[in-house]
Amino acid sequence: PACQLAGVTALAPPKLWKEFGPYMDALAAQVQQHWAAPPGARSFSGSIAIGFSVTSENVFVQFEHIRTGGAPAALVESCKAAVKAASPYPPWSDAMRLVLSPDQHLMMRFDF
Image: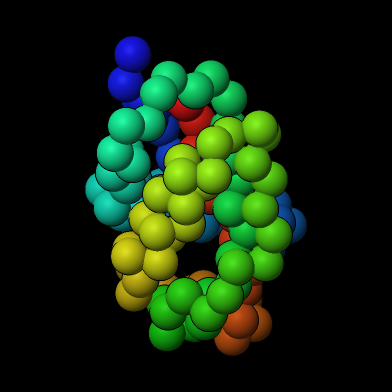
C-alpha cells in the first residue's frame, strides 16, 4: 500500500512557546500542505522528527537534527523538503517578538 501521512505536529520548547499554540498549529498545517509522498513510497508506520531553526522573519535557516524512526531515506527527504518548502512561515505576532529570541529551534513530527 501507498504511504499515508496521518498528520504533522509542530513542537517547540514548552516554556517559551506554550502560549503560542495557534501559531504552532498554523505552522504545522502549512508544512503539511507542502508534503508529498515520494514516488513509489511504501507504507510506513511510525514518526519522523525534523529539528530545524527559523528566524523571527519566519525563514528556514538549517536542519538541526533528524530522528528517522527507521523510515526509508526517500520518506525522510520528503519531510525535509516540506519543512523547507513551507518557508517563509506564518508571521510572528508582536507578543511572540517580545518573548522569543530572534532565532528559534523548532521540530516537526510527521506521523505515518
